[in-house]
Structures are given as C-alpha cells and as structure tokens.
Length: 305
Image (cartoon, rainbow, N blue to C red; front, top):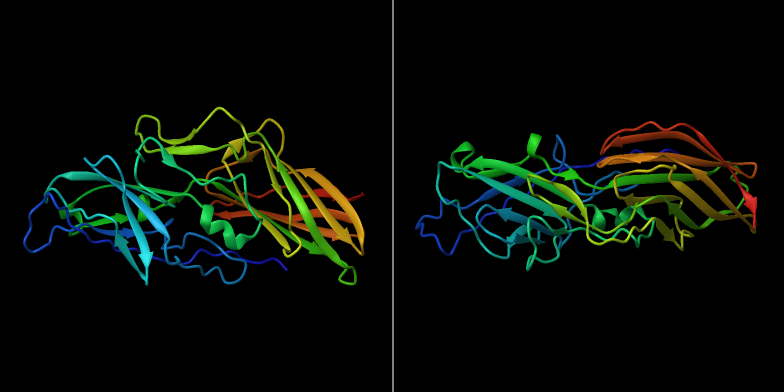
C-alpha cells in the first residue's frame, strides 16, 4: 500500500522585551508567526495521517539585527518561551530576522556558522526525521508592516535544507516471511558534516571540516517496512547506491541498485520497492513537496548470501 505523506499546520507566537529598552506599556514586543512552505505546516511527517506537532523541549533559534548571537525559544506546555527577550528598536525602520530549527544552544553561534544536525547516524524510521530536519527562514520587516509581527510565512516561510529520501518496501508474496535486516546508502558527500551560513554574500551550507562522509549505514531495520533518511543536497557523478540486506523465509539476500544522481534541497524523494519472486523491483517512484521529483523504475535482483 502506498501511503500519502502530508505536512500539517503550526504557528508560533513569540513575545518578549529587551532589558536595554524602556517601554512602559510593552507594546513594542516582537511577535512572530512561523510556518513552513506556502501553508502552515509541521516540521516533520509520519507514515499515518502526517499530523506531527512540536514536542516539549523543541527549540528554535532566531537572530535579531544588531545582536550577535541568536535567541533561543523552547516549546513548553503548548507555548514558546524565550531564553532572553527582545523588542523592536523603533516603529519605522526595516530589520532583518533570521531563524532556524533545531537549536540546541546559542553560545558562540554566529550567522555564518549555525550548527546543523549530524546525518551520519540515523535509524531509518520516519518518526525520527523531525529530530534532524533542518529548517531556515529569513524575514525583513518593520514594526509598522504588521503591528510588530515578524512573519515567517508566504515567501518568507521556513524551508527544508536537507533532502528527504523515503523507500517503501513491500513483499508481493504475502505467504513469505520478509524481514529487512540492514541497509547502506553510498554517495559522494551525502552525510558530510556542514554548518549553515545566513551571510548574504555566501548563504547556505558550508563544510564544517575537510572530511567527506559518503556512507550511511543503518544496522537494524527489522521492525520497519520502509526506510526514511535525510541526506545532504548533492549532485553526484555516480547514482546514489542503495544496498538492502533482507531475509525471505529464513534465507538471507542482498540487493543493490543506483538510485539518483541529484538530490535537491527540500525534495521528498519517495520510492517503492516491491519484492516479486525473489527479485526486488523499484516501482511507483515520485517526489512530493518538500518538492516532487519523478524517478524511473529500477529493478533490483536479490543475491543469496
């Protein structure tokens, strides 16, 4: 069965005040609306109804103009609490606001070197994607534009930086016992460590070192019927290689195939692998927003181990 993946709504409203400013009525507090994409969306997806909310202790970082380090916001009891507070400097000038998720800490974090999640260790479970999904947003606005609301919506919405790859595994012969054991993704730089830069002259991902990490190994898939991972947006000389190790009726097999050469930022690459008569076929391939990319059918022939 092909499952549909939906991203559902959320909004964040942040209010605070700056200790260096004096406003007796507090009407200059920054308020913030945040959403992903053209409609209000959640930060992650599931394999059921797609409804995933922020959980307690989720954290967002936000850079405010003229302040070096970001402000940390933590989700608690259905509201967002600010680590520090901030107000508009005035009612007329435009100011730039930059935000990102996830944010674990703010000390030493600069606009040019925002920490990004480590993709080299993943479980393959789609329920864990929200923990590593990296989102960024940029908004230039003034207090008078929208009564003090900084709106990361519409053209300023949060965007996904990584590429999402989902492989649905189906055994055509229901009378056979089929268990996925482990898998490997191999492709140039797919899980290389990066930091993110909001620098207007050279924005985007930057390597945090010189090492290229090109192999993602998932050791235990026994409880899963699909494999979902995040990888860096890359363009490779050779197609991304996927190797699946699985068991059918007690016999172990291994199958490999080249998938795609290009994985773009914000793309949701969805593929279906179907096991028929000992052969693993890849069919029904598509990509959704995130962004939608159609992929050609690929046939994988299982080899006994």
